[in-house]
Image 1 (cartoon, rainbow, N blue to C red):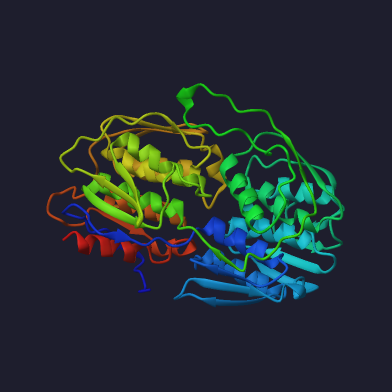
Image 2 (cartoon, rainbow, N blue to C red; image 1 turned 180 degrees about the horizontal axis):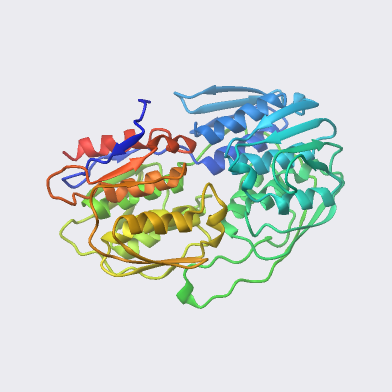
Length: 462
């Protein structure tokens, strides 16, 4: 991958897009599959895996804990073996800003039969929510010592296994906490009887449970520990109350080879691109929202379809197309609570839409890589838009775009990728850049070659 400049002007795409895009593997699935492979009874080979900062952090940590991991970046394969050596009894792990790895590795080390494990991250990671997971693990007998501020990294775990039994967890700030607890449940001495203090976002928890089943875990729980799916606010549906589930100590079995789906969140940017430029793009190997995809973020495709995007499923993948002579449809108020990693894509697209866009269900994104709600409001205002911000929502009123602006990314990969898409709009009508992305290299967290792929699409359309 070529080095990116500190600031990257986005060159508009002046003709309808065409061609195909190959997306990276899902970060969420890659990191979950890495953890489940570590706990399996035989070697596992992951194909189509993501290679990014977040997954490299997970791989490095698992190597530190004693596994043998052979990674082939060019082939997108990872082989995990020597599971019998897991839990090097004295390990120091650095999780950077990878929230998924941080929560999964904390639960894994707390479930170890013995050993002392220190886990820390970058200063921003020390601010991200961990309380719910730490309290739940402690209630199961884990000895977790916070070396700085209580309920935050750095931590030191003096492992003595988990005893099992009843456990209450508050996973409202991040469903990753519940996923972490579920995935290490086979290591507990007795079944976990899990009670949620409040409903959590379903799709990522369901992804975890489905993936666990694909690794041979018996789905003994009779009820899913999360709220029912909500499609839109205006359906008038209300969340179901918190539920209980029982997770039995059922071992994982190696599937031999496991194929990782393309990343549905990364797909959101290229699905949206034809709405900006017109034309048609094929997203290789991507499944439709109606398919059996494990990723809840694929639902964002239905949001774009409501705006006028035509989506067809083909043997090659999803084809997204839009006639540049067609008018975009009026957007609707949309609850993003269940696929919130994609809300910035719609927010960045909102200045090009004919009517105000209201995005709700995003309060929890204030505690991710950055405060995404306030950050989005600031950057849209920088572009001349009128934005109404509440704790849980954004209302974006389209106004004439202000050219010559540099989008601040706050070190957050999703800002860089989301705002690059409206940057492809030929605002001045001369093909010259009107929008610049600051620190584009932050995309390395989940999609290291994003701007290379975007440039290949632009060249194909010129």
